[in-house]
Length: 383
Image 1 (cartoon, one colour):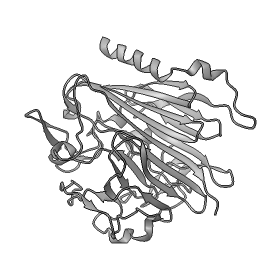
Image 2 (tube, rainbow, N blue to C red):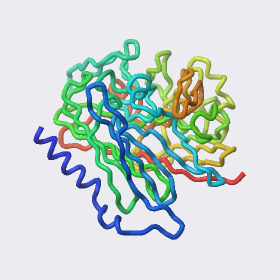
Image 3 (cartoon, helix red, strand yellow):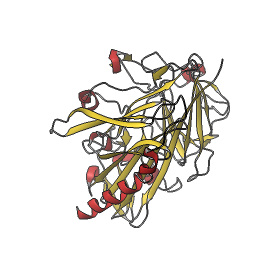
Image 4 (cartoon, one colour):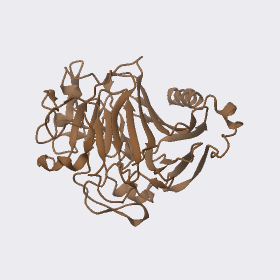
C-alpha cells in the first residue's frame, strides 16, 4: 500500500504541474474563464461518495466526468450557430450507471474488447479470466472491471486547459489478471476544443493491458435520434475479420469495395443494412497511423448541426460500434436511446491480441510503462 501511495503522490504532482501559473491568467476578451467545479453525484451501495467534476474551457465547451468508473457523463459543444448540445449518451443519476449502464462513457479495462475462451498464456502459464460473454471475456470482466469501481481523483488547471486525473490500483488476480496494476486516466479539456484522454499503467508482474473509452456519441445531440446520417471517414485500409462471437480469426483483410470501407467520407447508414450478422458496425479497424505516434483515426460530420469530431490516437486499432443492440434506454433528461442512436470510436489494441502472437503485443512487464493517448477534437462546418 505504501508503494501505491507513493505512486499516487508522484502521479498527481505530475498531472497538476503548471497549474499555479495558469490560475492567474485571464482568457482572451469575450472568452470564458476555464474552470473546474465539483459536486456530489451520490453514493455507491457500499456507501462511497461519488464526485462529479465539470470542466469548462476558454471557449465554453463543457465536459462532466465522475470518479465512479472514470466515466465521461456529458460533453457540450456548440453547433454552427453557436448553440451548445450534449453529444454523449448517458444518465442523470449514479444508480443508472451502476445498474443499467451499457458502458456509457466508461473507462474500460483491464482489457478492452474480447479475449477468446476467457484465457490467455503468458511466459508459459495460462491465466483463466472471468467469462462474461458466453465462454469469452469482454471489457474487463465482472465486479472489478474498471467502470464499476471508484477511482481516486484530483482536478487541475494548467496551460493546456482544465482536467481531472484519476488513479486506481487493480490488484493481482482481479478478474483473473496477474500483477498489481497501477493505472491512471487523465481527462483534459483543452482550450483548442479537444478532449484529451491519457492512459498510463505500471505492473509488478508480467501482465496484459488494453484500455479505452466507451463513449457513445451523437453529434446532433444525445437523444435526438439515430446516427445513420452522420458522414464518417475512418483512416484505415484494413480490418480484422471475426467469427460469430466477434473473436478475430487472426486474418487481416482489406476494407476496399465493401460496407466497411470508410476511407472516403460517407453516411454511416449508406451500407449498414449489408451487415446482417452484426446488425450494424462492430468491427476492429487496423489504423493507418504508426502505433505510438498520435495520428488521425476518424472524422465524423453531422450535417444538420454542422458539428465535426475528429479522433486522434497512438493506438494501432479502433472498434467502430453503432449501438446495434440498444433498446429503449431512458437516458439524460428522460430522452430515449434506441438502436443506432450513438456510435463508439474505441481506440485500442486489437481484440484477442494475447492469443494472436502476430497482433501488436499488449504485454506489460515490470519496469515498463503503458502509455497511450486519444484526443477528440470538435469544430463546426458551414453547410
